[in-house]
Length: 370
Ligand code: SAH
Image (cartoon, rainbow, N blue to C red; front, side, top):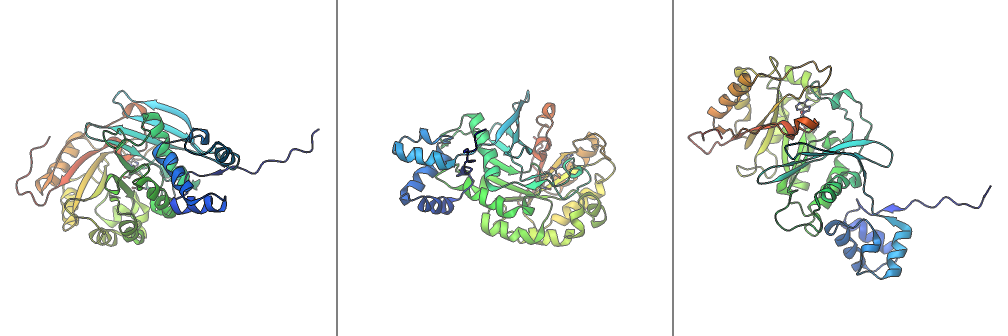
């Protein structure tokens, strides 16, 4: 038996390091500072997965890099495509854990729904992920990796300046992004860098169940759009649907939304509201919703409940959803109706079943429904 095999030092992943981290790593590696900039360009603008492709770096330097580092891509364990163009990738990380990433193409944009954790701690009673326990947080590289994998599949390297299929990102997949803030923030800073993936903060939406103390940081440090999973208009019901409400009740949540940095009529906060039959879908609740949102630049996303085996709820009837939507509409919201997406490849992403109702407080006459 050979006893002289030394297990090699694992190759360090350069994906997931921010600009400063990459510069530091290269300095420690003995490379000149501009090498870090060249690498950044290859990794995030060109999408390189192999040092050998980096043709403006000397061959010897490429070989040294390859001996010490890797450019990690998570593995796609399954790829599904819906008849409506929605695509879903089941992404497997090095330890075998998996999350879902979904691309939803529309006429004027293409949205990627990204996960932030494997499992979740929140236990929302209507959410399938809530029935699983938290396995672990995703690292920054794993969050960025979901976007890199989608870009690979969509053939979008180098980062196209216009006409992209992947224009928007929503953190609406598995997990609570604000319970993994440091990694989410590090990932988003990489994603927003104009010399790389270059997705503007205006095209990124972070969805939270309402981790109130984190909201001002998200606004100030990241400046991305905010979506809040509201789902109920009384603390009593919200305590049950979104148990996080017991810690951060409605009033505190809405106050934090009211002072969310950067929100304006042009950049509204999205309030997600899952339609549960006989639970939260009455006309009185629609009126209360409108009252609660007063003074907040808001739009409402009514999400038909997506059932799962053993779920204790049913989706509201089309009539109830329409009546709810009409009340919100009559209060100054316009209502472009979106058809559910990707139903045939069922996914956890809230964006897949959205019907949005936009608040237009500045418009005196409601716009006709689309
Ligand atoms: N933890 C974050 C993001 C993940 S959930 C949050 O709570 O916002 C993304 C969205 O999908 C949330 O609005 C969530 O409430 C919604 N959702 C979860 N399960 C659903 C289901 N079965 N049907 C419809 N929407 C669901």
